[in-house]
Length: 287
Image (cartoon, rainbow, N blue to C red; front, side, top):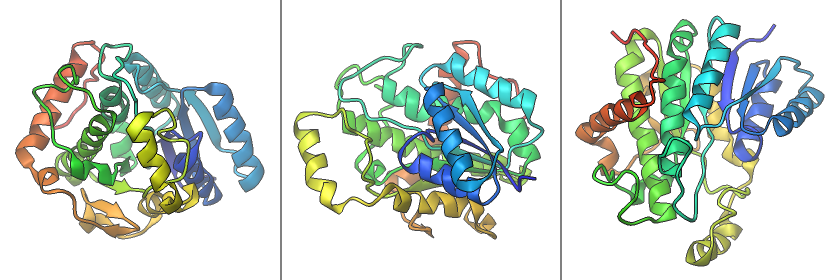
């Protein structure tokens, strides 16, 4: 019998895949939320073959498509009584400005709004499971600020600035979850996995591509990058660190702007409004 029920996004490559393998080896029942079902099924078979854990399940979920997120959450709600761990790992860097199916700038949609909606749709199950929510952020947040006057990047678009802002939003979201749901047994953490040598950012060009190539000799493996996420999912006695940002299994300092409560609260309100426009916002008891 599985020790924990864990839901993870972005598990089909990189640190997500290494995290899934490690948690399956520790007996977690894994629900892999993926865009590509055949790729997810291949990973499922690989995990079962390596760990012997057969409680591995694949569900379709495209985080840039809010209806897909809602459908995945509804399916999980039908299947499960509780969730013990939610790992919001999927993310992307987009060289050129793109819009999601719902009309949101793609970085904002994939790296923030999709996970924001997924987490809230699953909140009843997360509360039942006294869950840990782990949001994969990045040091890139330190070179960013919230652009509430231009969240869609219509005035000026930079792939890495858009990415950095989304990672700042991951930290804001983590802190708000800890504040709003800590008394209900929820623990929330954000983590910087390190500069990982994966296919992430493979589509970038020009100066951004050159920067990636220069940094490559200093990059760590996906297995090393997964270590902090695995630690946050499994370590005991982390309650006093609720809402914290971690690097290499230790609490780390964020940028000053990442501690701005006013901006954090503003992001929460704006995110709710953006999602409610599509009539897919779940009714939950947050009181």
